[in-house]
Image 1: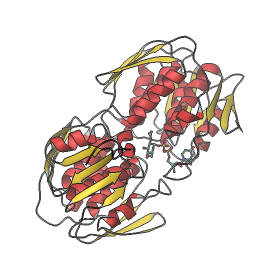
Image 2 (image 1 turned 90 degrees about the vertical axis):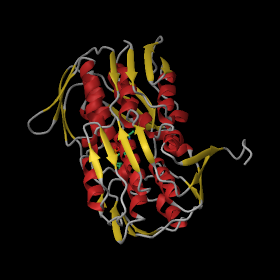
Image 3 (image 1 turned 135 degrees about the vertical axis):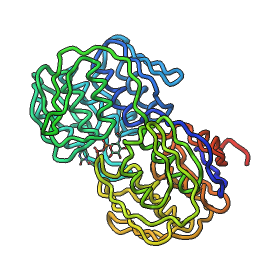
Image 4 (image 1 turned 90 degrees about the horizontal axis):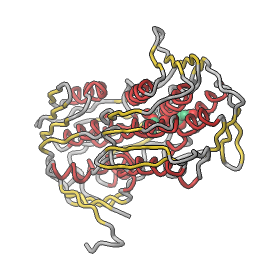
Length: 423
Ligand code: UD1
């Protein structure tokens, strides 16, 4: 398995270009199941989760081609309406095929994704929504079995604004003739990108005066050509990495307003920045970093996916700060690893209390999830000496060419595989 060796003490300087959003890409790729017509997607990042999604589409009977950031998906005979556990266990977002398959076949059999490193992560909100649309949901042999005589539009209020459930229901309702109304939905920018694709496919989607998403579905949807929105989590990660190393970095091809809360907190922490239409320029600074307390929340609140990289910034602030993680029950696996590098963090239930330290020292650490992995990379960049990060495959799930992008900014990150390479 690949590892990273990070030489610490290097300031990041230069320009980094942001890739297309992983979290928009995955449901959009899956939306290709709603039609037999060609689907062309641009700005698709080369990530492990994207490759897994393409495998899923192939397993379901689509033909996929990926070249220079463009994915072309075409029909290749009959589609299947079930998915093997092997593929679902690699990525929870595999469950997002349930909505399109249910809409196409009135039946689908998908393995329950189960828990993950971040906690239990049930899919009850997805299933409640499918039931409202006329499906029955049963669990047999570890699979969710969805079936319906007929699907019908409905008014659905989500008990929590789940990102995945919102996307799954939007996709399903777009292929059901009539008006479905979704209330208390997620409002992440990725949702709007999925909505845009569904509009291009022929469905009508808009937000009404009460903030509800109205979907006027059609019984047939067409193919699309679409460029994926910028990845706001990658954007935030590079902004935070630049600030942590006190570097001078222009983060380009992004949508700064998708990171508004992060940018406000960065300013509160004392990081100087210039914010343009499609870039954020992080400027170098001398003064000590001020501690800032954050609490994660659904968009437009502070993104849970930026919680770990934010913590990697705060461990070097002057004073005490707090991180309250309320979206996922178990999302502090990076904290003990950061402590091994000299950070002072105490976690209790959903809260991490951080006392800023003057410096970090390189250590042998292990990534246990995607964003926590990037936090370790950030800490490695700031630490004295060498940091060795194991289980880099977590980082590869969601960051396109992380060592290439960081090294172009002056970092020294080397990928190696102890089973193959001699070091
Ligand atoms: C998506 C993102 C992930 C991000 C998360 C929250 C993708 C591929 N992944 O994940 O990067 O961290 O949003 O912004 O887009 N929940 C339930 N029942 C459900 C569904 C969710 O209890 O049916 C709970 C989850 O366990 C979790 C919370 O709701 O505690 C948020 O989950 P959700 O918004 O659904 O996240 P995902 O769509 O899985």
